Image (cartoon, rainbow, N blue to C red; front, side, top):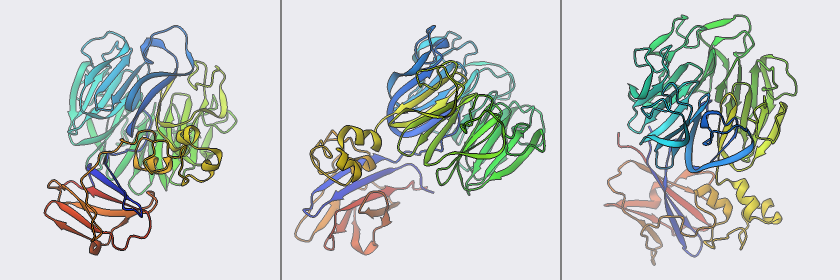
Length: 498
């Protein structure tokens, strides 16, 4: 299994100019409702209701346009009137309403400014009045209201400070009063409210301790009364309330065990009796209740079968009655209820069809009356900032505007390599030598025995480098460049020894 490690990226051109960087190979989970993680970090923005300080300021007026909240954020989760986010250094922060202790700071005091809750957080989720997060060591923690056992600690007692729930966890997802999480072995677990069978165990009994639901699971999402999850083969499964078509099956009011809904699926999002999901080819699908146009298909008619909303989509999120998604070009789209300005289009008008809100968006999250997103470096924003019209037609063009930091890499290549396009020092240099034998030497390998050497000419498609073209000598990797005829990139992907 490939686990978190490092990528060593080496760029060579005809003149043997060598650029290298050390890149974190962070795990990028699917983007479910509730909690979203990304590689790197960006600026957190929010719009909609300011009640309780969930947008970082407790005000009487709603934000009808997105406002900048804080920089250096890489994961976000919206509860009903509270927000959690993970900083670039994996510090977990919280703000907003705290009457049930859902912020986890040991009090029930509302916070209109972010407070630090824990360090080493890698996944976060929030629901109406409780919150969950996963630490770097795989420990699952929970805090806040626990009336239905949603914290999974075996009780129904509220917790004002984080309590340990389980270990060996990698992703967590929270719904109205229910939690789902995925362990490192791919098993899906759940606890909390189960009155409509949304835990999929064949009963309608609430669970205060986690129960295993399925195996080989990649992602999940849970809404008001139904849940969706994604199997490793791309199969989408669902269980719970289905009266409005939110599970694409109106034959029964409640489905107590998981049923297959679709295949070739990449992401799922369950909400208040409606659902969005993303096909592997980027097609956005919707089904279920549609009272405010939240399905984004131009009407307010419920759909008992999945309908196509848009194409070229890469991420989805759902509030109670509004939806968000990110196009592959980084543009943020929104649809549905907008009475609190949660769509961020400058109005309080519901939108039956998607409207564009922002560009350069990396991640999204939504709640009942708020939306939040992380904005950062994307190819689209770089095009707007640094490329001329001609260069936008051909991102391989280099020049003063296409390569503003003069390091020999166009913005297109810098985006793929996770470099900063205006900082020529935005890479960590490793030792190298080129000599008459045309050999590239990279060291040290630092006792990492499991790795692959890969090569590419465009940074988008990679192949294993022929083992005859490199040798390992002690802690040094030597690559034979004698046959190099085009600009080439090399990278070393390290694996966990276990």
